[in-house]
Length: 125
Image: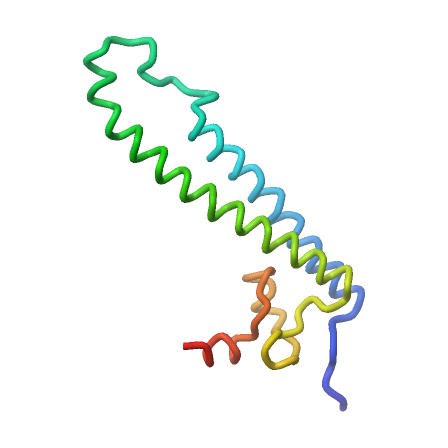
């Protein structure tokens, strides 16, 4: 039997559903992180005594920096998922960019934006 060159349209629909669910969740998480950074829904110490504000400033700065890093990672994840949707539309989804072989369904279900097979990923080390 010949080796499959690409996933069928039915299989691509399954992966698209997985990606869309992850994308929706990722966008919700990103919005929460943005709100954390901008304090748009905050019960901060802005309206309380200056003593508490001084004690909280260091923690707030650290928290904002961490939230900023997490938001950047989340934005990158969203971009990877969007790129995966484009590959589905182009019918190139699930093809390893190193080996040209199909990435296993198990890997794509776990990491739907993967562009490398396990074999290619291990060879990068």
